[in-house]
Image (cartoon, rainbow, N blue to C red; front, side, top):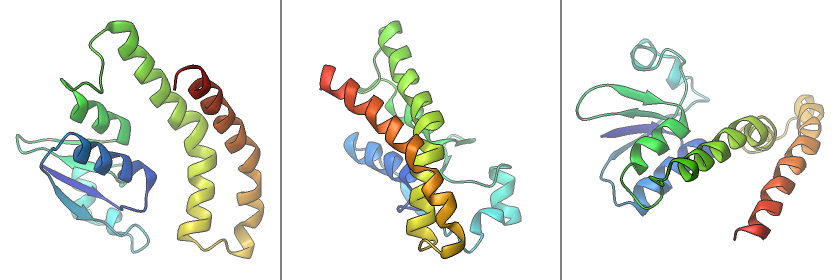
Length: 147
């Protein structure tokens, strides 16, 4: 399989990490989003959303969205429970991550890491802090109950 991503991206890194933890052989294709490599006709043909990560399967077909790829990779491993309720809890935290972490922490990180925190984005960066800290508090509370 081939995985397209930018290793500096948290959504891409978590896929690379899971593949390593589960010893899943894959080809990593580094994609430069700042040079609009996800906006080429060839890339859009595989992922009309024009975003990474993107997983191209040996058997054909592609998956986008980091958590969908994580679930695909983790099937039949100890990291994805077969118990219905526990599986739903995994999904619950993945949905939380995308809704409560991604728009705050990941966007602020993008502004700082990819953009270099330019003056014209500082207000946007600052506006992400409250939501980001709220999301981290939820995670910390959960980890204190179930380390």
